[in-house]
Image (cartoon, rainbow, N blue to C red):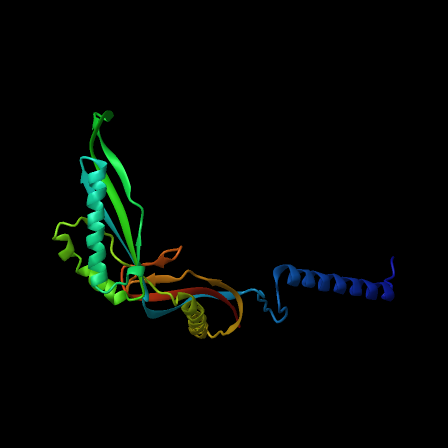
Length: 251
C-alpha cells in the first residue's frame, strides 16, 4: 500500500499548472491571440478591407495635335513636291488661325514605293510612290486648337490631303491632384468601414494596410476602368478618379 506524499502532490500540481500556462502562451503567440479568458479570443490582424474612392473634374491645359500630309504620284519627286505644297497650305491655315509658328514641328519627309503583287508574289513593277510628312502642333490654348480641328474640313475641300488624327488633350496638374485625391479616398474608405462595422455593433481601429490604386483620367461620366489605369485624351473636360484599398483593425 502506497502512501501519498503531500509535497509530491504539490509539485505535480505546479508542474501541471506550468504546462497549461505554456500551452496557452504557445497558442496565443502562434495563433495571434490578443485575449484569452472568459471564452473570448480574436486575432491581432483581424480587420476589414474596404475600397475608398475620390474624384474631381479637371480641364486640359495642354494639347498635342498631329497631322499627316500624304500624296501619291508616278515618281518620287512629284510626290514630295505635292506633300510640300500641302504642308505649306496646312501651315498657313494654322498660323492664320492664331497658332504661333514656334508651336509647329515638322517631321522628316518619308517616301515608299507601292509595288505590284500577283498571287502574293512581287512582280517587280512599281505602281506609284507615296510621300508623307507629319506636322505636330503643341499648345496650351486648347480651345483654339479644338476650333481649328473642327474647322479643318474647309481646308480639305480645297484639295489638300491631310490625315487628321485629332487633338490629344492633357492635364498638366495631374501630379498635384494625385495626393489630394488619395487623401480624400482614404477618408472615404474610413467612412465606408465605419458604416459596415457600426451595422454589426463593431468599430474601426487603426490602419493595418493600404494599397493605392491606379489613377483614372476619363471623359466626364465615363464608367471605364482599367487595372493599369486609364488616360483618355479625346476631350478637354475630364474626370480624374483615385482609389485606395485599406484594411482597418476592427474593435
